[in-house]
Image 1 (cartoon, rainbow, N blue to C red):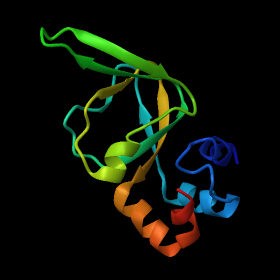
Image 2 (image 1 turned 90 degrees about the horizontal axis):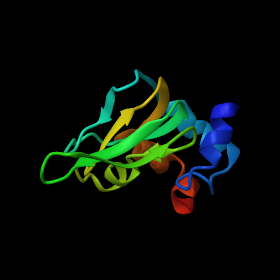
Image 3 (image 1 turned 90 degrees about the vertical axis):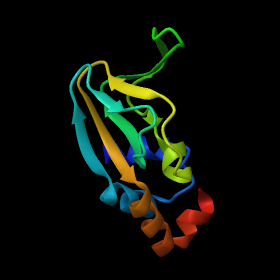
Length: 125
């Protein structure tokens, strides 16, 4: 139930009813990351959307001199990768765990298949 409550707060899902959100949660995969572990790499063609269920992550890139630039940090309920999941475009930043982290991951194809079977959920996104 805690997972469902967190997912309800994500803009991509906030207009879905409880049954639809439970259906989305049912196709999401749990992932665990250690502090310092990179979750997403720049130019990665992965098409997964992550919702942070525990821990913290930071978004970062490098400038022209190779100096690392921290762009943002998020905690529980934060999410990342939705743009690449929806458009299929490569990632433009890196994401790494700053403490032990758990994400729920939604794959582009699985989400597409879910929406085909639940047209109301697709209209509400």
